[in-house]
Length: 409
Image (tube, rainbow, N blue to C red; front, side):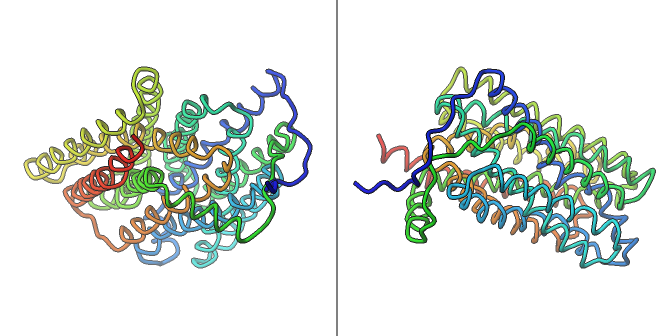
């Protein structure tokens, strides 16, 4: 049988100390991924005023980041099975630094949009390769639990990002957020350069037909497809809050960017609690059971939240309580789905991570774009969107994941 991997030396055996350093750096940089979306959220109203643009424009700064993240994941993730992990990650951080400096220097709306797109592309280059590195150096049975760690570290970004962004906006301006991005990008580049070696040695040849076959094999797996669709839908709940929440809480309800940053801090902590709870549950239950009960429970919670909004009207706590359930649900569902997806095709970790993020980010980007056109001056609007997302997740669970599990038993 023809060997589909290039004639490379066998991967080295890492000492426990070296392996721990690699894991610390890879996991330690993941907060920057979540922070890339959330750090500028408190500054969105100020950006609209400062650049004399519409609220739709400033909301699309999140959309463009997600579009870049989607493109970067697919392109760089697919190539990482061919060229390796280290060089794409280092190049990605150099691009991230440049894309962060430009909008801070040139206060032009369209430079800002383009820079946000390339911020997304570059941070995706790290994100997709970081997951692939874990698949390279860890045994299969540990991947599911380390996927929850990725989500936990990612979740630190939404915790500290809006708080940092709120204070930077309050005491300086929105440009300072981008200087902060550049500084963090430089730290990430140095950490990867000095600590993380190349980890991928069983490389796929760069053949279009092979890439096409891999893609078809991955997306034709019903359980995988259902999982990544639900990943995109549930993560979109966080994007809904970060896109519509600043305008509702700051412009309609009259609170400051710092106050919104504190609310976002609470939401990030809830997401982090969800990922920790997920790790605990995985020690006691199968991932399929966790997935089923989570989808059902948080759909019921969203339904009750609509009733809450109808009864109590437009109050800050009316949006905080349903958002807590949304972030907690994402903290449980997202890492469970990610770990299961990675464990389905461990021999194609880069391609799987690329396809996983392509599909989930298409969904998230589309929803973020739709949100940019919605004027949410009432809490009920955001809560109704939460409910719609969870009901959609239930449908995909039933028709793809549940039916796929039955077909394999």
